[in-house]
Image (cartoon, rainbow, N blue to C red; front, side):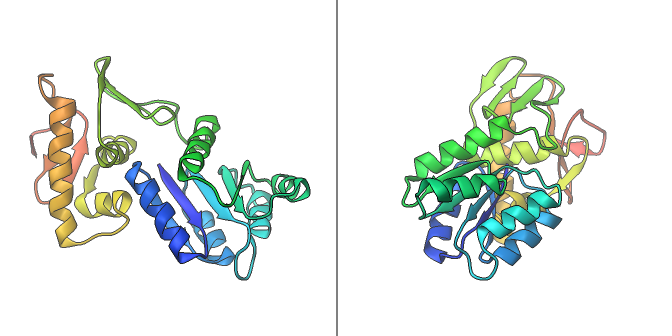
Length: 229
C-alpha cells in the first residue's frame, strides 16, 4: 500500500514515515501543499495523510482542489484545530476522516487502515495469483487456503509483485517501492527478503510461483524456461 504524507514538520514526518514503513507501507513525503497536490495528481496512492497547516497552500485548499479535479483517494486530515466548526470545515472540503494533534501513532494507523478497508480506488478487493491470495484490507495472505505469516517488508514486496503479476519487477523497483530508495546495498537486502518470502509462499507446494529472472529481477506467476527458483 502506498501512502502520501503531506507534513511540513520534519520531525513529525520522519516519525510517521518510519512507523508506516514498519507496518509495510510505502511512503512518499511532501512538505508543502503545492508539492503534495502535484504528487497526488501524477502518482497513484491508496491513502493521503494531509496536514491542515502547511506553508503556502494549506491542507483544506489542497483537499478542495483534489476533489474538484475528481481525485477520490481517501484523505485523512491532521490538524491541531479541534473545534466542531473546524472539523466540519475539513470534512466539507472532501476529507474522509479527521485526526486532532497530538495523537497516538496507533490511532493514526487504525484510521488509515479503516480508510483502506472502505476504499475501492482502483484496486480489487483481493489479489490472486494461482492459489495465492492477498487481501489488502485485512493484510491476510494465504496459499491454497492456508494462512501465510509475513513480515511487513515481505508483505510489501509480495503486494508489489502481485499487482504486477506476470511482469518482471526489477530489484531497483522493489527497493523504491518498499524502502522508498534504491542503491546497490539495497539490492542485496531485496534479495534476502525475497529469499525469505519465497520459502514462505512456495516451500512444499510443488508449484513455485516466485521466480528469479537472472540479471533482471523477479516475477510472480507460473514458471517459464528462463526463470530460476
